[in-house]
Every structure is written in C-alpha cells, then in structure tokens.
Amino acid sequence: DFRKYAAIILGKWWLILALPAVGGVAAFFYSASQNEVYEANATLLVRASSASLSGSSVDFRQSGDLAATYRRLVTARPFLERVVASEAVEFTLPGLESVVSAEVVLNPPVVEIRVRHGDPQVAASTAQSVADEFISYAIEQRLGEIARLQQAAAVQGITNTDALVSAQFSAIDSLSLLEPVRTPTSPVVPKTTQNIVAGIFLGLILAIGGAILLETMGDSIKSPDQIVDMFNLSNLGTVPRWPD
Image (cartoon, rainbow, N blue to C red; front, side, top):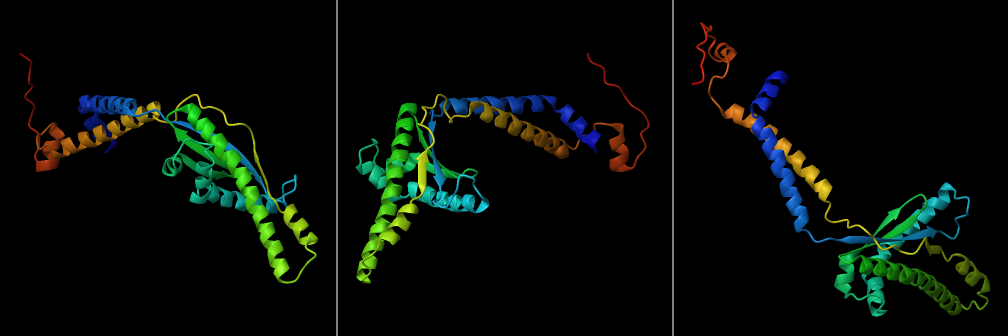
C-alpha cells in the first residue's frame, strides 16, 4: 500500500511542487500585507509578605496566587480608567484595553504586562507607565484595607489598634519592577518565516490529498496488474506506445 501511494504521489509530481510553492508565496504576500506590531514587556516580581528569601513551596504558592490576582487587576477596567485619568498614556479607555494584556509566569512568580502597538516607542512607554501606576495602585489598595480595618475596630470600641495596623503593614506585599522596559527592536507581527513554513506545509498536505483524490476518481487502466485486480482476467500481452 505504501508503494502504491508513493507511486501515486510521484506520478503527480507537478502537483506536489506547485501547491507548496503557491502556499509559500501566498503566505509571503499575506505577511507583507499585515501592519507591523511591536510588543513591550514589563515584568513585575510578586512576593507575598510571608514569602522568605529561601522560597519554600508554600511561599511560592501564596505568591503565585497573589500574582494571579494582580494579573486580573492590571487588565480590569477600574485600574485602566485610573491610568487614562492620570494622563500617563495617550490612550482612551477602549484603546488602552485593546493593547494591554497580562500573563502570570511562575518560579519565580511574576506578572508580565504586555503592550502591543505599531510604534515601538509608544509600546515601551505605555508598558512602563502601566507598570509604575500598578505598583502605586496595589499599595494604595492595601493601605485602604488598613484604613477600613481601623474604622471597623473603632466602631467595635477598640481604641488600641497599633498591633492590628502593624500586622497589616507587614502584610503589604512586595511588588517591584525587575528592570526598566526596553524598547522592542523587531515586530512580533507579521511572523513572515513562520507563515511561509505553514503555507508550504499546508500546500504539501493539499497536494498529497489532491493527488490521491485525483487517482481515486480516475477510472482508466494504468498498469497490467489493475486488469487482474479489477476484472479477474489474465493479461495476454502489451502493446507499446512509441513517440512520434
């Protein structure tokens, strides 16, 4: 069976060569028609207050859970509204939502803030502004929790809240930017090489499938063995066909 299909494919060599070439050329022109997009990354290191420098498994799990929470906060509308209101970036809220994304990377737990834009300078400056603003935002959120705790204690008649406040201050998590955001030098879109390889591979698959399909649809006799297989008749001889 393998030799049979190999013979079919070799018999349609023109199809095997044509479709991958067409696929590669089409992928090249598709990539050339796309606008260039650059991606700038800001890496925030997350370390829970209980996490020691030795980094036990519990510490990493707590820091990882906190990083997952921060990832949701950094792309949430309340925080992005704050960034737009601060005029640190030249974006409207829908525009900022369309270019900012975040992902958690473990070991060590970090939050990757990613900004994609057609201008590499804008992508880098926006990622830097979002990261700086989020560090301040996270600290303010914790300070707000301390203030609410003090108010709740006062309502209950607890006047000595020094120990509670001290405990809450020690619970302020460590959130720091690992390094300044670098300006990207090469675009992430289009991925010309990857698209061309995918186009050639897809063309090859279509060519092989097309060759087998054409062979299956054909009803002509191409070899003496087919006469025996199809009609159970013996082959008496062969009449050669000579070129002119």
